[in-house]
Amino acid sequence: MIKGDISYLLTLLFQRIMEDREVRDEWREANMVPIFKNGSRGEAYNYRPVSLTSQISKVFESIIRDEVVSFFERYGVIKETQQCFRKGKSCLTNLLVFLDRITRCIDKGGSMDVVFLDLAKAFE
Image (cartoon, rainbow, N blue to C red; front, side):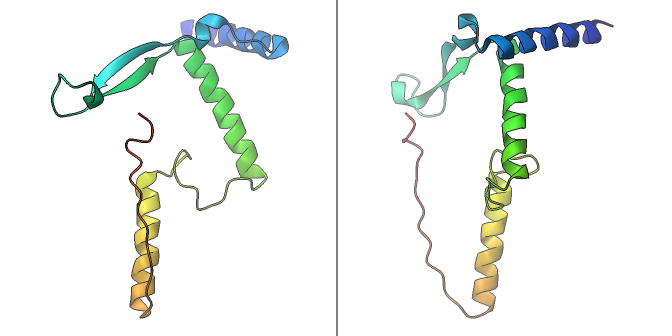
């Protein structure tokens, strides 16, 4: 009963937002919290920032994301080689596809050049 009431109210709220084309300021705000990665706890670069946002905005964001991805997949905007951020696919499946391609190339007597980039610090 409560689940139905909440989903009905959220639907009305989301419809209103879509009609007004405006998102409440409170939904755009986030509390930044440092999460410890590794190393010395006294060094700032050993923490990564995580933004805590409203649960309602996360639900709304998830609905919008699913619709956008569905549109992109339906009209072939996203290539099949795009693995991450898609349902049923992940960085792991991307690595497995990569490993399969390299293995097939080596089995056929070919060679392959690979360039690896470490982007770990790119987002800090």
